[in-house]
Amino acid sequence: MAELAAFETKLGYSFNDKRLLETAFTHRSYLNENRAAGREHNERLEFLGDAVLELVVTEFLYAKYPEKPEGELTAFRAALVNTQSIADAGTKLGINEYLMLSKGESKDVGRARLIILANAFEALIGALYLDSGYETAKKFIADQLFHKTDDVVANRLWQDAKSKLQEVAQEKNGITPTYQVMSQTGPDHDKVFLIGAFIGTEKLAIGEGRSKQEAEQDAAQKALIAKGW
Image (cartoon, rainbow, N blue to C red):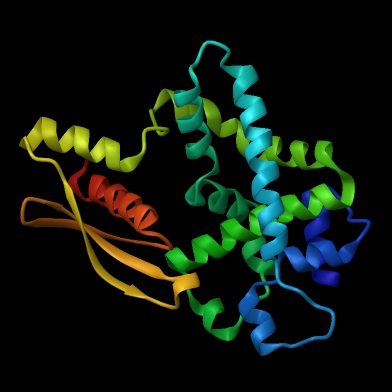
């Protein structure tokens, strides 16, 4: 637990129940290779942390933008708590150094690692909530994410990538983008989709995600970058 003690120092918080922090950073794949008695993976904590994160961010946005309608607030929230945003926050915290992964997962540095990192960030929120309550979890989320809000709003980062790609493609080319499933792998409960974004017959980019919607958004985001839009 010495390594996790270093993380607590960085976090500025000492857990009463150290097992919660350990669990937050334990990926399912690690337990498949290291079947230690009494250990569990972080998926239940992630489930809890996701709900706390959504409530905290919703409460913050509701107070910050009293004039904004529900639809825009929903879009702002989605931009603040999407996989990329919270994985970036997790990277800045150095969570990557403490993740307990299988040998195979530890080599992955692509989209799959982003998802693992985002899930661990949510699991950490769940751990803080269980260890010390709502206010502690809220302070952590505020410190890690709230500073991004003005940039999200000012630069329209809240507009989802598919909507933005459609808007620009119609403006520049008079064509609505289409999406095509290139492949899907994995069992039903853990599928990974590869989806291509097209304008006419031109393939702009391929996105990856755990659902078709997520893969389409990833493809659209990559397409915007590829086209310089």
